[in-house]
Image 1 (cartoon, one colour):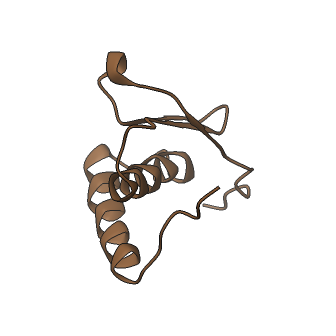
Image 2 (cartoon, rainbow, N blue to C red):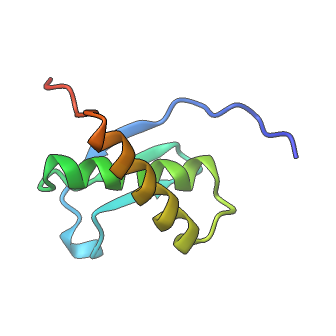
Image 3 (spheres, rainbow, N blue to C red):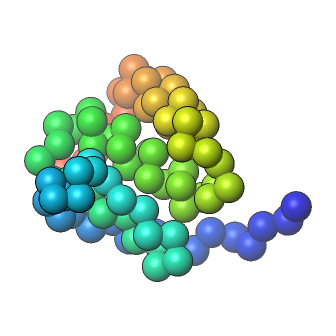
Length: 85
């Protein structure tokens, strides 16, 4: 199946304690919300996880968990980090 190219995704920070979540993906809006209290490594993993929900909405939660955790471990071990703003 051919997909339309992904549009720009905006990442916003918001405390998500009441939602019992570390991150949320709003597929129709192209927005990822992520809890600003996360450590850099956890933020990296959660951001990949939520990005996968937008990129492949048909994937199950267990598939997204498995693949995003795998990719995060590889990229983190190779030195990828968040650039300081």
